[in-house]
Image 1: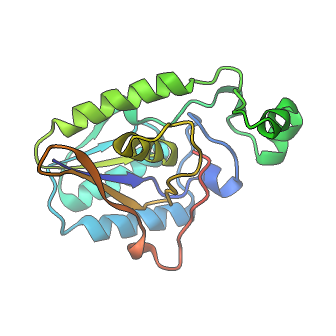
Image 2 (image 1 turned 60 degrees about the vertical axis):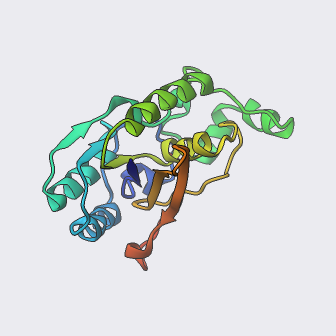
Length: 207
């Protein structure tokens, strides 16, 4: 089992600095360049399948990769980004203005919950389900998802609480590889590999 996780290219929402969640932004011009370079890097790599979150910023990135690898693309609903509810589509200043209690919660060391948010427990259960399915697949799987999803999957692999922020940075179109050791334990073989994006890296993670 070999799982190569790729965050989508920079989206229009990333470029605008908004919290995206499930809002369906397309790729920015830079994001499209990142996706093409990622496809070129993976073209000569062997894989058995390409999967993607159904959101457009991920599926557009994945389609370029699948074409370069001469594989079919399949959508995986459980790889969709965390649903941030009423916080989606807003910049940092807009979030603080609309939800003044956000700063109060942070000052107390608490995580603020936006109205309509998916919930971390639901998110964790969804990703545990996805990871269990993915680890059962033979060969190499390329899966295009989101910063929040890939970071959370890494948390699950190493046994960290998903509520712990910032443990794993995930740049746009970076590669993170998860494999199994001889005992069957999942391990992170590489993380946030952006060697193919020299000069056009973007790391802001708002979904």
